[in-house]
Image 1: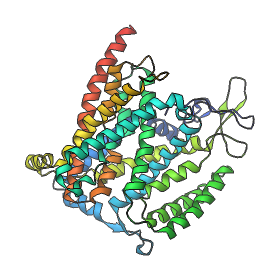
Image 2: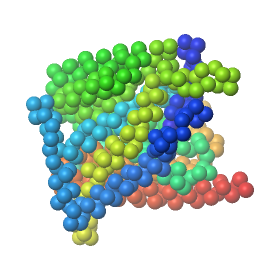
Image 3: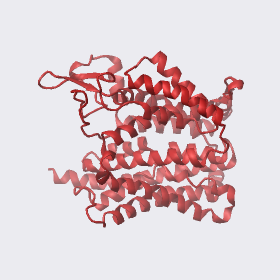
Amino acid sequence: MTHTDPPQSDSTHTDSRPHAIPVDQAPHSIWRGIHQTLGKDTVGGALLLAATLLALVLANTGAAGFYNGLRDFTFGPESLHLNLSVGAWAADGLLAIFFFVVGLELKEEFVVGKLRNFSTAIVPIAAAAGGVAVPALIYVVVNLQSGSDALQGWAIPAATDIAFAVAVIAVVGRNLPPALRTFLLTLAVVDDLLAISIIAIFYTDDIAFVPLGLALVPLAIFAFAVQRGVRAWWLLIPLGVITWALVHASGIHATVAGVLLGFMVPVIATKRARVKDGVDATGRQLYDGLAAHFADRWSVVSTAVAVPLFAFFSAGVTVGGISGLLDSFQDTIALGIIAGLVLGKAIGITATTFLVTRLPGLRIDPTIKWVDMIGMAFVAGIGFTVSLLVGELSFGVGSESDDHVKVGVLAGSLISAIIGGVILSVRNRHYNSLTR
């Protein structure tokens, strides 16, 4: 994410690159090389793509029995309501790590980033809202005659997969205006917040208030510890796991626990809660807040493990050959998702941005042209991770509708990536020619 300089606290300067690794003092180790590689935008998208393709191959070949058996294998303590399938552990457990990082990044943006200044953030915030509302509306219109069951998936095309979207821009848009990537990142942050709210509000049936209330205890201890600068994994990880388990038992989707834990971590470096982050040109010690410190470490786990494994166990739909694929495309659920991702995202983001910038004092960065905005809006139609999750919450894992959801999400995301990638590639060549 793109960050601005945070305010100073306790006479301590915080570096304006909270996720950066001070190269001058870093040991040239294998781990550091792996860490830096996994931090690249293209790597996250590549791992997601590889996991998805592998799942599709296994689910549609002679290895389908092995794949389905592995995904559906259950383990865990039944007494704690945690006797879950491997696929459910990936969706409810591993994906909580992804949402923990999202929570950290959301808090950073609200405290020291683009979202702290409302007048600066209002345009991408409005664009994100339009990019959520219009795809949902298109899905509902397509499925109006299909019954209430189909309408349960109204939120599936509303999400943007930031890993894939940023990876596309990183591959095809090296010469695009930096402000375009910043706009996409800010939009995606708000999109994530809206998606989290939708999951918590609309995809929670019955709430068990006792475990939900109990979850506040380890959450409060976790918050107290990190506010005092505690970084001991043997304390924080168990507190996080207990919070997650209790939220899961309450009936609220457990990934929400990841966001809440991320929100508890302090962003601004204080004398108690800070991490050394090199020195400036005068030799003065620089410090980072714990949010940047945790995001730097857990983003690698999220990128390399949590999200790819979730994709692997969620994207393995048995297509059934050309006839099966055609059957899926005849289902209004799949058609609504494709229309929502491809058309809804592009129309919602572009139209909302256009309308908002007609208001006095509001505009997009002058380096961004409208054709750039349209290309970026199509790229934002890559739904994938959260779309697959919402699909599972809507129709249940392994159902026929869930299989059609996966086909719709994969097809819609692919079409959006191709259209947006082509537009931005052409614009990239244009900007490249201006620099020669």
